Amino acid sequence: MNEFCVVFWTCKDLNEAKEICKSLLQKKWIACASFLPNVISMFYWDEGIQTEEEVKVFIKTTSKRYSEVQAFIQHHSSYEVSEILQIPIESGNPSYLKWVKEITV
Image (tube, rainbow, N blue to C red; front, side):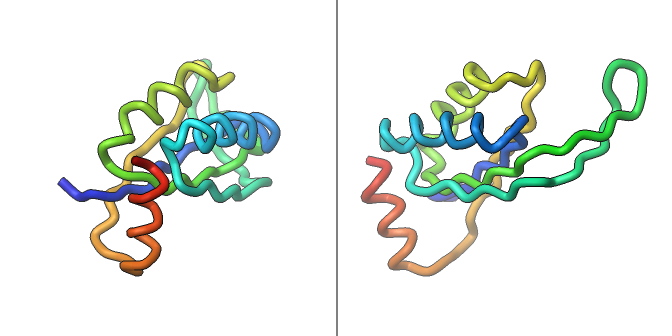
């Protein structure tokens, strides 16, 4: 198992993303969150193809924190079915990864 991961999450809007990520930062479950607003997503829902403007969130944390982060996002997200994906980090800047580990203990 990789020690670090990026949590890839799709959110309704920037306010919701910031609010949830601020709570995760305060808990020290994540080291950093980056927001990519104004993403257009197309998906199948309610028996039809939907198009929505959403926010993609990239969260950096340790793999051991993923379950807590995923459960927190799922509980606080306004979406009925949230896209929350764990992407393992194979390698990276050692200084950055050390910082992530120090923040999320």
